[in-house]
Image (cartoon, rainbow over all chains, first blue to last red; front, side):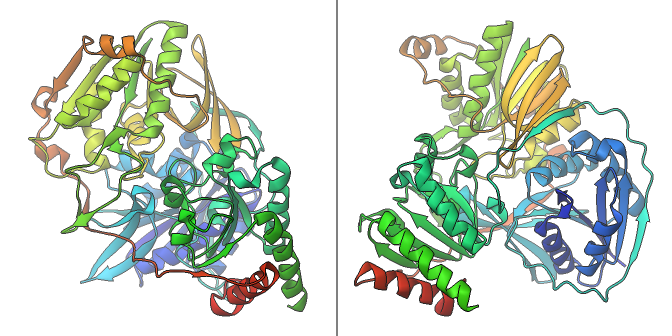
Length: 325
Length: 257
């Protein structure tokens, strides 16, 4: 029977959603294969392992070591490599996150294998598993295959739906001892700069502001709407350059690429570099004073008007429907 | 210090993508230094100015890559190396590029290698970490701060918006993230000087590499454009009514609320 490893990832003690999506991706790659979750950390991996099983993993291998409390490519590299040697998988799937982007090329290089990063769709074509990934910041897509050997991919968050959580599922959780050698890179401190709330790259709704938001305070009202919708806040480069918000919010060719279900752009003109970061969103709403703004060319719904007039009204309307539900 | 920069040329960010026969048309495209690699070039120059040494910019590309290498030299890099694979390789992937670079670095005494964290064309971000693994040196990706104090290196690393303070040592490979620095524009004297700076051109033979060793592990079987979006709906009427209509459309038609 074929076997797929899913390398899990947690943050602040909870698994990231993309890990569950990776399990669904693993099923697409080997529909009848055994799915083995892998979790690294310093402690308390049992409960997280159970979650992986509820989301479709058949079995989970955990590696606990005090050196794995915080992700480093060195530490996780050693742990994951040891599991791969044991399990000899036919495929490996991980999320295309900060950690996934850091860890998977290191492992692929170690194993001398191919790696297809940032996959948004997995299909079966003539008996071959075919991976689709955006290139040129979403201005085009490429269809890729692994020519031979290990199938190794990272998946972009929020594109391959996770399976239903099912508490009736059960599976073995096995803890594996790996001797982690001294780390060459040491994390001294983590500074939380990120605004509260939802992660931009994983958010299903993104509220974004451009230069027309005019101030930091202007962004505060975007947060008000975002909080109501469980959305993340993003920005155009113009808004970041003007100092209205942190560069970590920047969406575009440089910056983050997002593909939420709903993207609402306030006062964003729609420069090609910004569109590159969001044009593959499923539904796009644009609010802009300028009826000629480029953003309207890709918007599904548009309001030509002053965002400072629209935003409070929109907040009120959303409150109403939230109250109805 | 021996500082190296991995550089790739990419389409200009304004470039429209045209696909024919499953390939991207590149005949008339304008190229630039990959924007993230510009941060790497800038940082390399700054570190050299602080600690002394030499900055060598390396690219795996074709004849036309000379233009971007000359730009890096005009910014202030000392030497450039073009590994020209145009005549030898038809296909390649991140594995291929890494093998070529690993062969190049095999006999080099390296202190620091800088690269962009991702190239804006294929956007896989693999080559930096892959190369570090091959050279068996530590790496840190998406850095926004770099401070070298004797053998100790203090790094600030962007992790999806948070900043990690990392301590490590040379030799080291880092990949650069926006926020690290503001890349300079080449000055006119810089441009004049760059014409005389050494640019070494190598082919696979010079690196004792054979095409067979570089067989890519992945294959692109098709490239296509995203489906044309149908024209959207611009709402009309009083702003209050437009907002009401929008919310009901999002709720009932698009089903995203």
